[in-house]
Image (cartoon, rainbow, N blue to C red; front, side, top):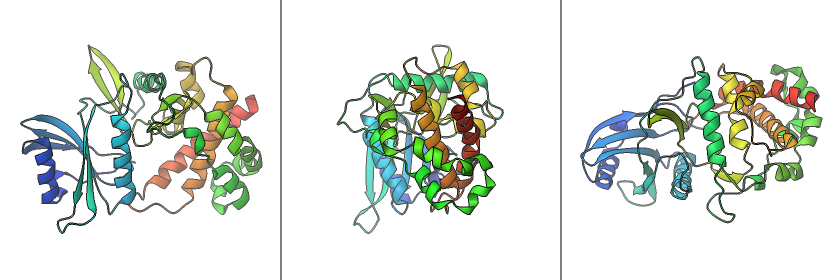
Length: 321
């Protein structure tokens, strides 16, 4: 599922020159970081002034450019103590003929480390990811700031699946199609608003394949979160549970087995978590049946295997309830 990104020489010359000018020195070395699901560049750059990590997107990929701009706002506003690299700057570049910006570049400190070990899953690294999610959620962010309120976005996929009954559902466990009306009733907009409300910082896309680096600090390995465009304000369990479908789909333990290793905070509402699992199940299942978005042809397969991991998780939670 890993994608290969373009590299430093693939950038137009004027973009490379502008980045070097912003850095304050010529670029003497680079490392491209593959993975993730958005088009564009992810590079660690070396220069006489030190190391910097940059993400670059052409505005031909409007979604990627918009996400970079959003990430710059969020990363600059993270509370002190959040385990994340320090944000540095954002650069908007017009094309060589002038006019509207054609390139967006954002920069942060380089986090030296490694990706979590997932082939097979290293349970110590899985614990580090879970502890990272809990550390992020310990930070509260003010209402009205740059972080959107998660609960104000409602997820319509369960209701849409119940109405549409797409033929592609036949490829999933029959339990899903039989229980669509029940699932839609669990995740009404009113129930989502209640379940996902909170004051806590939520990364919003915390997965081992694209948003986490394991580094060594003071002789101990710890996980650090990168990639912050989707961060929001919400309930403290969202990151810790939201990563679990991808973990299980990638050969890791089942979601409830992970939560036995690293439990949710004591005051988390069990029923609110079930609402979230139902939302994820419907979202991944319906999204997997859509045409792929431009520039990201492989995302539908990834959504499918996450849906397949969600269905038994939701079925078991509803049976237990």
